[in-house]
Each structure stands twice: as structure tokens, then as C-alpha cells.
Image (cartoon, rainbow, N blue to C red; front, side, top):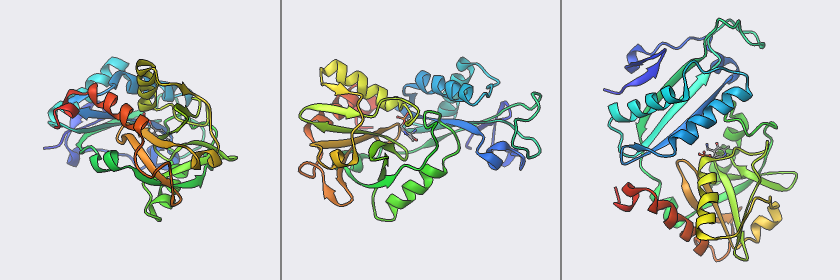
Length: 284
Ligand code: PMP
């Protein structure tokens, strides 16, 4: 039996009660998080929950639980659903109220829902790398908020999928921002480059893990954006996200990056990433 969290309690799917008036449906008026589970344990859960609260605050929404309570809910879902490798999804919408653009009355309580799902690591793509397609970044100017409003991301990912690419390499005014659901990194002459964490990208938790690993390994990293032309000439490219981890990029628009196989710095970071997670080392 799969357990979900909704309306303040753990419940079965048949008992989920979602209103047609939920502002998540009408406006994508909400925020969300995805937390990875490895070996039954949540990975970087505090960071994800903290970002959930930051996203909510940026859109002036108050989550009716504490960060500690949200952590407990996520842990409980992973445990009760006996997830070994997978993720917990959490979403908070501004609540259910008759459709008007402006915020509903303050008595309307945000709706928190969550579930846990078994989901294997994408090991083949992590090992072999993936092709990406360059796509213009047409999203709004608050990409730092992990909002449910994902149409720009959805359209970009679909454009990539239609030409058998795993991800869209988004660029705004010729500058690479991020992926449709990932952060982008380039390697040139031994230095790693990635877009600074500002309003144009989501400051990925995996991105922050990679920044930490670079410091530990004394690998030079600059939070400096690179152009789409520079991307084509990088020695290595890789993307990061909670579910993709550190994934090499082998080509953009059919043009090979470097020698067309995952690069040495990418491999080094992948190894360092795996070393932090016992269940990956154990090959589970
Ligand atoms: N950028 C976007 C637009 C994303 O949707 C994601 C995935 N959540 C990321 C970056 C990577 O973030 P994280 O490492 O926290 O999963």
C-alpha cells in the first residue's frame, strides 16, 4: 500500500482529496522540492527543505509546518513506502479558493502534499553521458524560485526530447544559464565554469554539492557564466541535478564536446560524489 501525505495526514491514493479550486491547477501558484533517497536515507534533505521555505517566502506563502516537521514528513514517506533508491516529492500550493489572480483571504491555508517513489539511478547516462540541444531560455526572471510554474522548462525539455536529446542547454542573450531541470557546468583548461547563482538560475542543491567537492579537491571553479559559443569549445561539459547527479554531456546539437566521451574532471567529481553515499559505493 502506497502512503501519501495530504491535508495534514498520511493517506492512501483513493482517499486523496484535491480541490478543483486549488491554485496549483489555476496558476501553478506553488512551490516544490525533490529529495533523493539513497539506501533508504534522504540525501541533503535539510538543504532541500530550507530551499522549499525560501521559495515559499519569495512568493509570499507561509507553509503551515516547521522545517523540522516537513523533514519528518519526508522521512516518514520514504520509510513507510520502503524506498531504497528513489525520491520524495513535496509540493505546497497557495490553497484552494474561487479563481481570482490576487491572493485569497488569509484564512485560506496552503495545501501541502507529498509522496515517495522508488526510482533507480540513471546509471547508463551517468556512465556514458548524454547529448543536449541548445534552446533559447524564454522563462521569467525569477528562475531562483522553485515554482510549480514550469511551462518554459516543459517546452524546452520537449524540444530537446524531440531530437533525442536528454536535456535542453538554455541560453539567454547568448549566455548559457542552466538546463530545463538541471544546472550546467563547462570545463576549460582545467577550470570549471558555471552560471552564478542569481535570479536567472535555480541554485541547485547538487550544484552546491559540486562547488563543495571542487573546494575539497582543489579543483579551480569560477561562478562565471559562459556563452553558447564557448560551450561548444569546452573541454568537458556536465549537468547536475538531484535525480541526474553529475551527468556528462557528450554533444550539443550533434557537435561533440571535447573527444565526445565523459572528461577526466567530470569523472573525478563523479567519484568524489559517489564516495559520500555508502549505498552507491555498495552498488545498491
Ligand atoms: N535548475 C532547474 C531549472 C531545475 O529544475 C533543477 C532540478 N530541481 C535544477 C536546476 C537542479 O537542482 P537540484 O540539484 O537541487 O536538483
